[in-house]
Length: 368
Ligand SMILES: Nc1ncnc2c1ncn2[C@@H]1O[C@H](COP(=O)(O)OP(=O)(O)OP(=O)(O)O)[C@@H](O)[C@H]1O
Image 1 (spheres, rainbow, N blue to C red):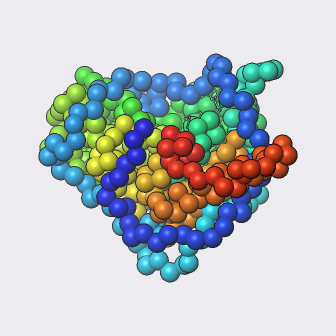
Image 2: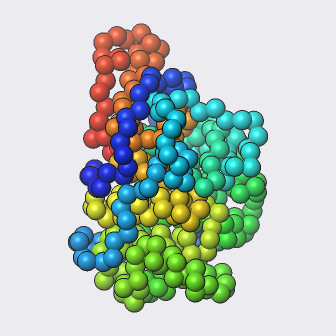
């Protein structure tokens, strides 16, 4: 996946400080079996419709503003006053507070059994703030998608609890989870998952149509305006660029006013300009429309749009970074990776490169 070099998301102020990461003991074997995983097809109320191929960027569509206004941690445009810090351990209270839109406690997910067993999540405690954009990063196989799927009710945890908007979902039946996803959760996937035979407007309305809920015209117009698709509403996905298709998917995720939107690599298929448009929209949907968004990404430039970045490694929450910018995220990835290498070298008794690793996105730690 190429790196995005879109519009600078915000004023850059590089965080400083040392990593005080939590323990990450070892790399688990990465084995894929059929764990009855995610994606039961109704996530966005549209099944798993094949995405139309993204067309070239720069097609003249109305572009949403590309830069988030104030990614300062306050989330609502206040002047940044707090000094920035580097990544720090994640301290999660015993009970989720009212500000949490989604929470996990002791969240564990084990796939398979015996020698092929994989502990994809290993006791994750986290609160995701209401009215905030949270990015989840980590090396490939660290458990990002599994965490998102468990939080979104797409996958069932092996143990632990998940609360979404005040409702405990980890022991819900499939029927209850389906209803929850339709009513409280919005999804944006890397592959757009638009229905190719429907127009943009019909795709946006689909979750409401499936739920047999009326379309509030004012809400529809506001969402369409926010994603800048007023002049593309009657086009089918194949007539839209990749960025436009993903903006349709974002509008579809938001039309039903979900409690929280989960976005899995939403810019993974996009060029830098389209990525900036989509990320700018996701950020504005939080800052201006009051939504809550959780986004899995490998891209430091994408994570820089978030209020908070969570770093996963080996199924555990390793650290978090508040008030992130791209340089600070890159620095954090390097520090966390070096700390892991030091721990591994310590546990195996080897010496040498530990502590000297320089990790770039292309190295696959935090970015593919
Ligand atoms: N259905 C499954 N069956 C068996 N193992 C699985 C399954 N789904 C995920 N895993 C394993 O769980 C671990 C975490 O996977 P997950 O997809 O959550 O990681 P990720 O951080 O999202 O990775 P990537 O960045 O590569 O998408 C990996 O070792 C993966 O191989």
